[in-house]
Image 1 (tube, rainbow, N blue to C red):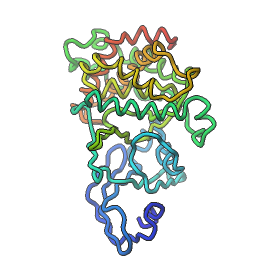
Image 2 (tube, rainbow, N blue to C red; image 1 turned 60 degrees about the vertical axis):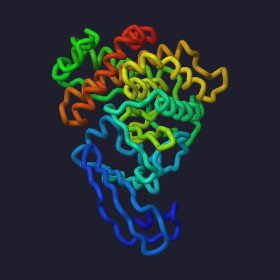
Image 3 (cartoon, rainbow, N blue to C red; image 1 turned 45 degrees about the horizontal axis):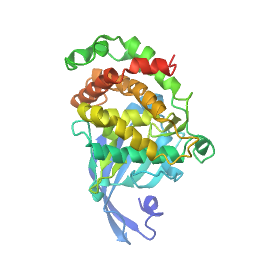
Image 4 (cartoon, helix red, strand yellow; image 1 turned 30 degrees about the vertical axis):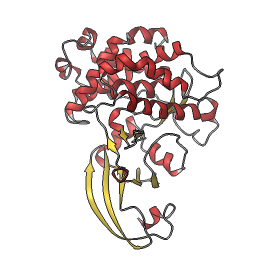
Length: 338
Protein backbone atom coordinates (compact mmCIF):
# COMPACT_ATOMS: atom_id res chain seq x y z
CA UNK A 1 0.00 0.00 0.00
CA UNK A 2 2.94 2.32 0.64
CA UNK A 3 4.01 1.89 -2.98
CA UNK A 4 0.47 2.50 -4.26
CA UNK A 5 0.29 5.84 -2.48
CA UNK A 6 3.85 6.95 -3.22
CA UNK A 7 3.08 9.12 -6.25
CA UNK A 8 0.42 11.13 -4.43
CA UNK A 9 1.89 10.98 -0.92
CA UNK A 10 5.69 10.82 -1.11
CA UNK A 11 7.22 9.98 2.22
CA UNK A 12 4.13 8.27 3.58
CA UNK A 13 4.80 4.78 4.99
CA UNK A 14 1.74 2.67 5.75
CA UNK A 15 1.82 0.90 9.10
CA UNK A 16 -1.45 -1.07 9.36
CA UNK A 17 -4.28 -1.96 6.98
CA UNK A 18 -7.74 -2.87 8.28
CA UNK A 19 -10.56 -4.19 6.08
CA UNK A 20 -13.70 -2.16 6.80
CA UNK A 21 -15.86 -3.60 4.04
CA UNK A 22 -15.61 -6.29 1.37
CA UNK A 23 -18.10 -6.94 -1.42
CA UNK A 24 -17.53 -9.77 -3.88
CA UNK A 25 -19.98 -9.08 -6.69
CA UNK A 26 -19.24 -8.80 -10.39
CA UNK A 27 -15.93 -7.35 -9.22
CA UNK A 28 -14.18 -7.62 -5.87
CA UNK A 29 -14.36 -4.41 -3.87
CA UNK A 30 -13.05 -3.43 -0.45
CA UNK A 31 -12.75 -0.35 1.75
CA UNK A 32 -9.54 -0.26 3.80
CA UNK A 33 -8.53 1.83 6.79
CA UNK A 34 -4.88 2.88 6.93
CA UNK A 35 -2.54 4.04 9.64
CA UNK A 36 0.93 5.46 9.02
CA UNK A 37 4.34 4.83 10.52
CA UNK A 38 5.71 7.88 8.74
CA UNK A 39 4.19 10.82 6.91
CA UNK A 40 0.49 11.05 6.17
CA UNK A 41 -2.03 9.96 3.56
CA UNK A 42 -5.72 9.13 3.23
CA UNK A 43 -7.40 7.52 6.24
CA UNK A 44 -9.29 5.14 3.99
CA UNK A 45 -8.97 3.86 0.41
CA UNK A 46 -11.16 1.80 -1.91
CA UNK A 47 -9.90 -1.22 -3.88
CA UNK A 48 -11.33 -2.84 -6.98
CA UNK A 49 -10.21 -6.08 -8.64
CA UNK A 50 -11.41 -9.12 -10.58
CA UNK A 51 -13.75 -11.67 -9.04
CA UNK A 52 -12.66 -15.00 -10.60
CA UNK A 53 -16.26 -16.24 -10.65
CA UNK A 54 -17.22 -13.40 -13.00
CA UNK A 55 -14.05 -13.11 -15.07
CA UNK A 56 -15.53 -14.61 -18.24
CA UNK A 57 -18.67 -12.47 -17.99
CA UNK A 58 -16.59 -9.31 -17.63
CA UNK A 59 -14.38 -10.29 -20.56
CA UNK A 60 -17.45 -10.85 -22.73
CA UNK A 61 -19.39 -7.70 -21.86
CA UNK A 62 -16.93 -5.14 -20.53
CA UNK A 63 -13.35 -6.15 -21.15
CA UNK A 64 -11.04 -6.78 -18.23
CA UNK A 65 -8.49 -4.04 -18.60
CA UNK A 66 -10.23 -0.93 -19.99
CA UNK A 67 -10.67 0.78 -16.64
CA UNK A 68 -7.32 -0.16 -15.08
CA UNK A 69 -5.46 0.84 -18.24
CA UNK A 70 -7.28 4.17 -18.40
CA UNK A 71 -6.10 5.07 -14.92
CA UNK A 72 -2.68 3.43 -15.17
CA UNK A 73 -1.92 5.75 -18.07
CA UNK A 74 -3.08 8.84 -16.13
CA UNK A 75 -5.48 9.90 -18.89
CA UNK A 76 -7.08 13.30 -18.40
CA UNK A 77 -10.86 13.16 -17.99
CA UNK A 78 -12.52 16.59 -17.79
CA UNK A 79 -15.39 15.49 -15.56
CA UNK A 80 -15.78 14.42 -11.95
CA UNK A 81 -14.52 10.88 -11.25
CA UNK A 82 -12.76 9.07 -8.39
CA UNK A 83 -9.12 9.92 -7.78
CA UNK A 84 -6.95 6.88 -8.50
CA UNK A 85 -3.70 6.38 -6.58
CA UNK A 86 -2.48 3.27 -8.41
CA UNK A 87 -3.67 0.86 -11.08
CA UNK A 88 -1.79 -2.40 -11.64
CA UNK A 89 -2.50 -4.98 -14.36
CA UNK A 90 -1.37 -8.62 -14.43
CA UNK A 91 -2.25 -9.59 -17.98
CA UNK A 92 -0.97 -13.18 -17.67
CA UNK A 93 -3.16 -13.86 -14.64
CA UNK A 94 -6.06 -11.85 -16.13
CA UNK A 95 -6.19 -9.76 -12.98
CA UNK A 96 -5.87 -6.16 -11.87
CA UNK A 97 -6.17 -3.99 -8.79
CA UNK A 98 -7.13 -0.33 -8.65
CA UNK A 99 -6.42 1.66 -5.48
CA UNK A 100 -8.59 4.77 -5.42
CA UNK A 101 -9.97 7.33 -3.07
CA UNK A 102 -12.77 6.47 -0.68
CA UNK A 103 -15.41 8.84 -1.99
CA UNK A 104 -17.20 8.97 1.34
CA UNK A 105 -14.28 11.07 2.61
CA UNK A 106 -15.53 13.83 0.29
CA UNK A 107 -19.13 13.36 1.37
CA UNK A 108 -20.09 11.70 -1.91
CA UNK A 109 -23.59 10.25 -2.19
CA UNK A 110 -23.73 7.20 -4.51
CA UNK A 111 -27.06 7.19 -6.34
CA UNK A 112 -29.34 4.50 -7.72
CA UNK A 113 -32.63 4.28 -9.59
CA UNK A 114 -34.69 4.39 -6.41
CA UNK A 115 -33.31 7.88 -5.72
CA UNK A 116 -33.48 9.58 -9.12
CA UNK A 117 -31.64 12.80 -9.85
CA UNK A 118 -33.20 16.21 -9.94
CA UNK A 119 -33.08 18.01 -13.26
CA UNK A 120 -30.20 20.24 -12.12
CA UNK A 121 -28.23 17.27 -10.82
CA UNK A 122 -28.73 15.54 -14.17
CA UNK A 123 -27.63 18.73 -15.92
CA UNK A 124 -24.32 18.54 -14.04
CA UNK A 125 -23.82 15.04 -15.43
CA UNK A 126 -24.77 16.18 -18.93
CA UNK A 127 -22.20 18.97 -18.80
CA UNK A 128 -19.51 16.57 -17.63
CA UNK A 129 -20.23 14.08 -20.41
CA UNK A 130 -20.25 16.92 -22.95
CA UNK A 131 -16.85 18.16 -21.83
CA UNK A 132 -15.36 14.68 -22.11
CA UNK A 133 -16.99 13.96 -25.47
CA UNK A 134 -15.88 17.30 -26.87
CA UNK A 135 -12.29 16.84 -25.72
CA UNK A 136 -12.01 13.49 -27.52
CA UNK A 137 -14.32 14.15 -30.49
CA UNK A 138 -13.35 12.71 -33.87
CA UNK A 139 -9.64 12.95 -34.67
CA UNK A 140 -8.95 14.20 -31.15
CA UNK A 141 -9.52 10.64 -29.94
CA UNK A 142 -7.65 8.79 -32.69
CA UNK A 143 -4.69 11.08 -32.26
CA UNK A 144 -4.55 10.83 -28.49
CA UNK A 145 -3.09 8.46 -25.90
CA UNK A 146 -6.46 6.70 -26.03
CA UNK A 147 -6.08 5.30 -29.53
CA UNK A 148 -6.11 1.80 -27.96
CA UNK A 149 -9.75 2.13 -26.87
CA UNK A 150 -11.94 -0.41 -28.66
CA UNK A 151 -15.16 0.40 -30.55
CA UNK A 152 -18.48 -0.26 -28.86
CA UNK A 153 -19.81 -3.43 -30.47
CA UNK A 154 -22.58 -5.92 -29.60
CA UNK A 155 -21.77 -8.86 -27.35
CA UNK A 156 -23.42 -12.24 -26.96
CA UNK A 157 -25.50 -13.24 -23.96
CA UNK A 158 -28.48 -10.89 -24.10
CA UNK A 159 -30.38 -13.37 -26.26
CA UNK A 160 -30.59 -15.83 -23.38
CA UNK A 161 -32.44 -13.48 -21.04
CA UNK A 162 -35.83 -14.92 -19.96
CA UNK A 163 -37.75 -11.82 -21.06
CA UNK A 164 -41.25 -13.14 -20.12
CA UNK A 165 -40.10 -13.20 -16.49
CA UNK A 166 -40.15 -9.39 -16.33
CA UNK A 167 -42.79 -8.29 -18.84
CA UNK A 168 -45.81 -9.03 -16.57
CA UNK A 169 -44.20 -6.94 -13.82
CA UNK A 170 -44.10 -3.77 -15.94
CA UNK A 171 -46.71 -1.08 -15.30
CA UNK A 172 -50.05 -1.33 -17.14
CA UNK A 173 -49.33 1.83 -19.14
CA UNK A 174 -46.06 0.42 -20.50
CA UNK A 175 -46.09 0.49 -24.32
CA UNK A 176 -47.80 -2.64 -25.64
CA UNK A 177 -44.89 -3.39 -27.96
CA UNK A 178 -42.53 -3.70 -24.99
CA UNK A 179 -44.94 -5.87 -23.00
CA UNK A 180 -45.30 -8.34 -25.88
CA UNK A 181 -41.99 -8.28 -27.76
CA UNK A 182 -39.84 -11.39 -28.03
CA UNK A 183 -36.23 -11.57 -26.91
CA UNK A 184 -35.24 -12.01 -30.56
CA UNK A 185 -36.97 -8.74 -31.48
CA UNK A 186 -35.38 -6.94 -28.51
CA UNK A 187 -31.83 -8.13 -29.16
CA UNK A 188 -31.64 -8.67 -32.91
CA UNK A 189 -34.14 -6.04 -34.03
CA UNK A 190 -33.51 -3.20 -31.58
CA UNK A 191 -30.33 -3.48 -29.53
CA UNK A 192 -27.77 -4.89 -31.96
CA UNK A 193 -28.74 -2.58 -34.85
CA UNK A 194 -28.35 0.45 -32.59
CA UNK A 195 -25.01 -0.71 -31.19
CA UNK A 196 -23.69 -1.34 -34.72
CA UNK A 197 -24.70 2.20 -35.69
CA UNK A 198 -22.37 3.66 -33.06
CA UNK A 199 -19.32 3.13 -35.25
CA UNK A 200 -21.01 4.56 -38.37
CA UNK A 201 -21.40 8.03 -36.85
CA UNK A 202 -19.19 10.70 -35.23
CA UNK A 203 -16.91 9.01 -32.69
CA UNK A 204 -15.78 10.04 -29.24
CA UNK A 205 -14.65 8.54 -25.95
CA UNK A 206 -17.55 6.83 -24.16
CA UNK A 207 -17.88 6.03 -20.49
CA UNK A 208 -19.96 3.15 -21.86
CA UNK A 209 -22.03 2.45 -18.74
CA UNK A 210 -23.18 5.78 -17.24
CA UNK A 211 -26.45 4.60 -15.72
CA UNK A 212 -27.46 6.22 -12.46
CA UNK A 213 -26.00 3.37 -10.38
CA UNK A 214 -22.55 4.41 -11.60
CA UNK A 215 -22.92 8.00 -10.43
CA UNK A 216 -22.40 9.91 -7.20
CA UNK A 217 -23.33 13.38 -6.04
CA UNK A 218 -20.92 15.69 -4.22
CA UNK A 219 -22.12 18.08 -1.50
CA UNK A 220 -21.74 21.05 -3.86
CA UNK A 221 -24.08 19.47 -6.42
CA UNK A 222 -21.53 18.18 -8.96
CA UNK A 223 -22.26 14.73 -10.37
CA UNK A 224 -19.45 12.21 -10.79
CA UNK A 225 -19.12 8.97 -12.73
CA UNK A 226 -17.86 5.66 -11.35
CA UNK A 227 -16.92 2.33 -12.91
CA UNK A 228 -15.18 2.94 -16.23
CA UNK A 229 -14.95 -0.74 -17.14
CA UNK A 230 -17.07 -0.44 -20.30
CA UNK A 231 -14.88 2.38 -21.67
CA UNK A 232 -15.26 2.41 -25.45
CA UNK A 233 -15.20 4.60 -28.55
CA UNK A 234 -18.42 5.27 -30.41
CA UNK A 235 -21.20 7.75 -30.98
CA UNK A 236 -21.93 10.16 -28.12
CA UNK A 237 -25.61 9.21 -28.08
CA UNK A 238 -25.04 6.01 -26.12
CA UNK A 239 -23.68 7.85 -23.08
CA UNK A 240 -26.12 10.74 -23.19
CA UNK A 241 -29.28 8.72 -23.72
CA UNK A 242 -28.39 5.91 -21.35
CA UNK A 243 -27.63 8.43 -18.62
CA UNK A 244 -30.62 10.74 -18.93
CA UNK A 245 -33.34 8.18 -19.63
CA UNK A 246 -32.50 6.22 -16.50
CA UNK A 247 -31.39 8.97 -14.12
CA UNK A 248 -34.59 11.03 -14.19
CA UNK A 249 -38.15 10.07 -13.38
CA UNK A 250 -40.25 9.55 -16.48
CA UNK A 251 -42.16 12.76 -15.75
CA UNK A 252 -38.99 14.86 -15.37
CA UNK A 253 -37.48 13.34 -18.50
CA UNK A 254 -40.57 14.18 -20.52
CA UNK A 255 -40.61 17.78 -19.32
CA UNK A 256 -36.91 18.57 -19.47
CA UNK A 257 -35.07 16.28 -21.93
CA UNK A 258 -35.10 18.79 -24.80
CA UNK A 259 -33.54 21.48 -22.61
CA UNK A 260 -30.95 19.01 -21.30
CA UNK A 261 -29.99 18.03 -24.85
CA UNK A 262 -29.48 21.71 -25.62
CA UNK A 263 -27.30 21.92 -22.48
CA UNK A 264 -25.24 19.03 -23.82
CA UNK A 265 -24.74 20.68 -27.21
CA UNK A 266 -23.80 24.01 -25.63
CA UNK A 267 -21.08 22.36 -23.52
CA UNK A 268 -19.35 20.28 -26.19
CA UNK A 269 -16.95 23.15 -26.92
CA UNK A 270 -16.62 22.17 -30.59
CA UNK A 271 -16.06 24.39 -33.63
CA UNK A 272 -19.30 25.14 -35.47
CA UNK A 273 -18.30 22.87 -38.36
CA UNK A 274 -18.11 19.84 -36.06
CA UNK A 275 -21.02 20.60 -33.81
CA UNK A 276 -23.96 18.19 -34.33
CA UNK A 277 -27.22 19.91 -35.16
CA UNK A 278 -30.14 19.98 -32.74
CA UNK A 279 -32.18 17.72 -35.05
CA UNK A 280 -29.38 15.15 -35.24
CA UNK A 281 -29.00 15.14 -31.47
CA UNK A 282 -32.74 14.63 -31.00
CA UNK A 283 -32.86 11.78 -33.52
CA UNK A 284 -29.89 9.89 -32.12
CA UNK A 285 -31.07 10.48 -28.56
CA UNK A 286 -34.42 8.89 -29.46
CA UNK A 287 -32.64 5.89 -30.99
CA UNK A 288 -30.37 5.47 -27.97
CA UNK A 289 -33.21 4.13 -25.83
CA UNK A 290 -32.43 0.80 -27.50
CA UNK A 291 -29.42 0.22 -25.25
CA UNK A 292 -31.06 0.96 -21.92
CA UNK A 293 -34.19 -0.94 -22.87
CA UNK A 294 -32.36 -4.14 -23.74
CA UNK A 295 -29.82 -3.91 -20.92
CA UNK A 296 -32.34 -3.43 -18.14
CA UNK A 297 -35.10 -5.70 -19.43
CA UNK A 298 -32.47 -8.43 -19.62
CA UNK A 299 -31.10 -7.54 -16.18
CA UNK A 300 -34.55 -7.40 -14.56
CA UNK A 301 -35.50 -10.75 -16.09
CA UNK A 302 -32.48 -12.41 -14.44
CA UNK A 303 -33.68 -11.99 -10.85
CA UNK A 304 -30.85 -11.27 -8.41
CA UNK A 305 -28.07 -12.51 -10.68
CA UNK A 306 -26.68 -9.08 -11.69
CA UNK A 307 -28.59 -6.39 -9.82
CA UNK A 308 -31.10 -5.84 -7.05
CA UNK A 309 -34.49 -6.73 -8.55
CA UNK A 310 -36.22 -3.52 -7.40
CA UNK A 311 -33.54 -1.34 -8.97
CA UNK A 312 -33.47 -3.35 -12.20
CA UNK A 313 -37.26 -3.21 -12.56
CA UNK A 314 -37.34 0.55 -11.98
CA UNK A 315 -34.77 1.11 -14.72
CA UNK A 316 -36.48 -1.34 -17.08
CA UNK A 317 -39.68 0.64 -16.56
CA UNK A 318 -38.06 4.01 -17.31
CA UNK A 319 -36.44 2.83 -20.53
CA UNK A 320 -39.67 1.08 -21.55
CA UNK A 321 -41.62 4.32 -21.21
CA UNK A 322 -38.93 6.22 -23.10
CA UNK A 323 -39.15 3.67 -25.92
CA UNK A 324 -42.79 4.57 -26.47
CA UNK A 325 -42.52 8.30 -25.74
CA UNK A 326 -39.65 8.82 -28.17
CA UNK A 327 -40.83 6.42 -30.90
CA UNK A 328 -37.48 4.69 -30.81
CA UNK A 329 -38.44 2.21 -33.53
CA UNK A 330 -38.95 5.05 -36.01
CA UNK A 331 -35.70 6.74 -34.92
CA UNK A 332 -33.76 3.53 -35.47
CA UNK A 333 -35.21 3.27 -38.97
CA UNK A 334 -34.36 6.91 -39.69
CA UNK A 335 -30.67 6.43 -38.90
CA UNK A 336 -30.63 3.19 -40.89
CA UNK A 337 -30.02 0.81 -37.98
CA UNK A 338 -30.26 -2.28 -40.11
